[in-house]
Amino acid sequence: MTLNLLLSAAEAGPSWLGVPAGTLGAGGLLGVCVLLILTGRLVPRSQVKAAEARADRWEAVAVEALRQNGQLVEGAQVTVDVVRAFPAARQQQETDAGRTP
Image (tube, rainbow, N blue to C red):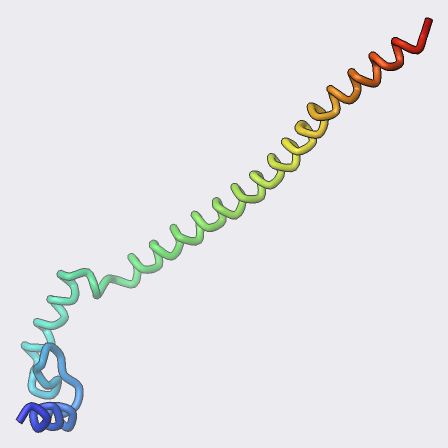
């Protein structure tokens, strides 16, 4: 029995919420559109374009922030190298001071 229902539904064509699309009529299609708008699944093109523009803007900001972060890391590495060189330089200075009379 269930298989027969599935086969008949498949033969009827596309459906929405179990109702064949061909039987909806104008009122049913209007109701579906209103339902899609109320649930946020159907939005104006202007809202989509605005959301895309915001996403593009934030993507550009993120790329620039990552680039600047990379520059800061490179600068920090130079500072780390200088700080690590201090003990070796001091030891060399003490060694040189011990050699001179």
